[in-house]
Each structure stands twice: as C-alpha cells, then as structure tokens.
Amino acid sequence: MALFWISLISLWTWLVLVLCVLLWLPLMLTVRLATLGDPGRYWVGYLFRQIGVITARATPYWRFSYRGAMPTDPRRPYVVVSNHESFTDILLISHLPWEMKWLSKAELFRIPVMGWLMQLAGDVPVKRGLGPSAVEAMAKCREILARKVSVMIFPEGTRSLTRELLPFKDGAFRLAVDAGVPILPLALHGTSTALRKHDWRIGRATAVVEVLAPIETTGLTPADVPALKERVRGLIVEARDRLATELG
Image (tube, rainbow, N blue to C red; front, side, top):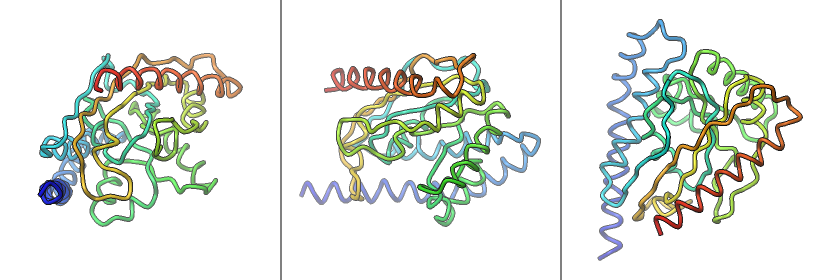
C-alpha cells in the first residue's frame, strides 16, 4: 500500500511539472515579447523558475524553504555556487527571490518544450568533456554578468552520491575573478531523499537552501582561484553540516 501511494504522488508531481511546462510556453513567449528591451532576459527567466516553486508546493511529500541574507539588489550580478544532492536542487534553489541564469547540460536543451523554455529563459548549455563548449559557455556567462544578471553553477559538475562533496572545478571561480564579480555561496540540505538518482519515484524531504555571505573577488587573479575555490567549498560544507544537524 505504501508503494502505491508513493507511486501515485510521484505521478502527480510529474504531471504538475509537465502541465506547467506546457502552460508556460505561451506565457514566456508573451513576456519575452513584452521585454525585448531587456537583453538580460531577467523577467522571462524569473517566470521560468516559478515552475520549480509550483511543482514543489504541489507535492505533499516535500517541504522546501530558503533562508539567509538575500541580495538587496537583484540586479547586482554574482556567480552563485552550491553543493549538489539531487535533481530537485533546481526546484529548491528556484525559490530564491531573484533571477539567475543556469549553466546546464546541453542534453537538457534538446528536450521538447522544456529545452525551448530554457533557451527562452537565457540559460547556458555546456557539453561535458568538450573543451570548446566550456570556453563558449564561459564567454556566454560573462555576457550575462555584464548585463547585470547572476549566473548559477554547480561547481561539483554532477551530483554527489554520498555525503562527501565532490571536488570543486575551477570554472565558476575563474569566471568570477575574470568578470570581477563576487561569489555567492549557497548551502543546501535535504533534497537527496526527494528524488534519488535513477529513480522516478519521489520521497519525503524537508529541504533548505541557505544563502551565505558573498565573497568579493576584487583584486584577485587567476593564481588565486585554487585558494578561493577551497575557501568557498569549506564554507559550504560547514553550512551544509549545520543544516543537516538542525534538520536531523
């Protein structure tokens, strides 16, 4: 009986997500046409993130929330980085009240309708393991930051299957140094049970994302990237462990 209810609620969750994706296409097209003067695509992207908020709130097994010091100016650009536990991290982070463009796997952009929405929102595709694609993606991210919109990157590159964070890659930190914008770390906990890797069924989850204090990069050079990367990783691990203790 328990498996039946889990399967039923899982089907409901995926149905809500699919319906939102289909309904959002004409909405986002309308907003995009109404905001052609905004090269940063801020509002059409912000609308896109609400799919994650609605889907999470419609799921009775999930309790998602956020905390921390929110940026006072939503148009001040940051390179935002976070640990990565689950696909549902995207839905959790989408609750944050400002727009960010996401660096995402190129394969996602080929999904019908969903991929079109990602393109409309101005998200950035990257092909794993392909150097020229990464260079092109970072160039696109610099353009976005110059248009006063933040960029969201998972520096682990993929989800960790254990509590141990994977090593952070240099890309997000080099981008912040090159663009002269702060790093904004996020620490999240609780999504690993919401949707396990390689499983379509959802689970119970109480998840929180905490916005940590921004870290300025003014005056830093590429030689400072390794130390910056480890500093940020340490802050995220510390905050994630604190959240884990609090949430149980």
